[in-house]
Image 1 (cartoon, rainbow, N blue to C red):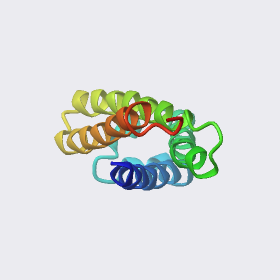
Image 2: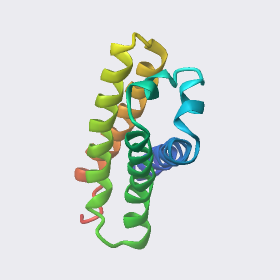
Image 3: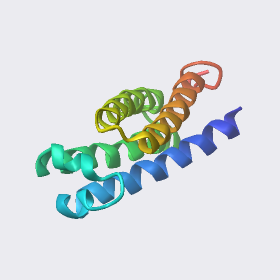
Image 4: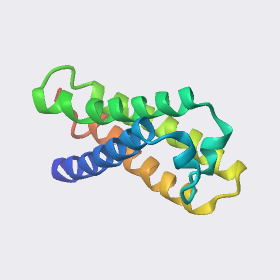
Length: 127
């Protein structure tokens, strides 16, 4: 179980880093021109950049505390926050009638829920 949690955590961290750096360093207009990037037209540059920073920080918060064994409670807390972020992403894409991104967000939500459940419960770092 611990190995499965680490694998899912690592995959989520990759998704978070890629999504975060994309939003931080690619101009919103370029993002809007990509497939399923039209949602960025509904938000300001500042919002998209802030979202990117949050995603990048989430990647740190879901891995680093466990690796350095400091504030390990942050791992499941970050996973819960990611669940909330994915709910917001799904709402945004549903309003735009974009089904493929909703499916991806649902998968990421399920992965984060698994990490939160596992790290709050049977494979917590404090047990």
